[in-house]
Image (cartoon, rainbow, N blue to C red; front, top):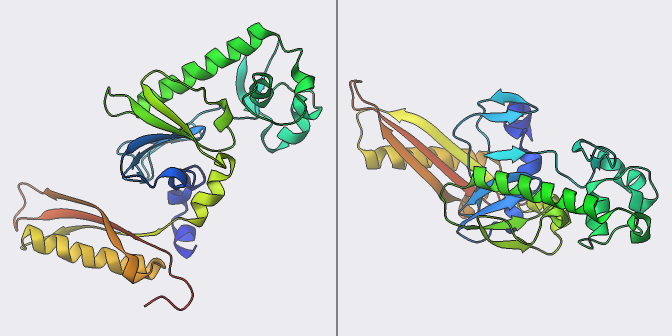
Length: 272
């Protein structure tokens, strides 16, 4: 918590990324659809290597590579113009959605209308025209297909995991996707991801006059120490990623080494 207070910008995407560890146990590439989209590599969110848009503002902070879109259960639909979003009823979904007796047509209402989720009273949206429901479904599929394509790193089909409160909005098939996984308790993925989150430590440093092996080993020691200081159990710390880049045209044979490690949160009395 102290580190987050000192480096607030690094927590901008934390709410969205907490959903990612929920189904990141397998060591493979897959895309997590949680109304924000992100890629899992080896069970951890892929880090962005370029700009990240936050509220429409381009930033270059170090954070997971996620794309946020206005496509959630509270997204408002105008039945007259058929415009979908970007406005949303947000946390007032339980009082504003038509299936709960409200006066606002939302994507949740359409999901209930199409029998994709159980919420409220389905009879209250029985009068929604089939053509409007079909228009919304086509819009959702188009947006999701585009976003999945933007997150992929190859043309090969890839699995997609649907989590979060809007998981019911994800169709059963998408172009470029070989399997859509809808997990149990997906609606509380944020809480589960936060509860199982690990503590990381990182060293990004330039070393001079030492061998590659020595530089990496020294960086690993620094990263391990930082993870333990942040609250990780030293006995559980493991290597997550290593990068080394020789720096040309500089005397001393400099080598930039970046090492990242993760470990389980140390419980009371277990910290070394």
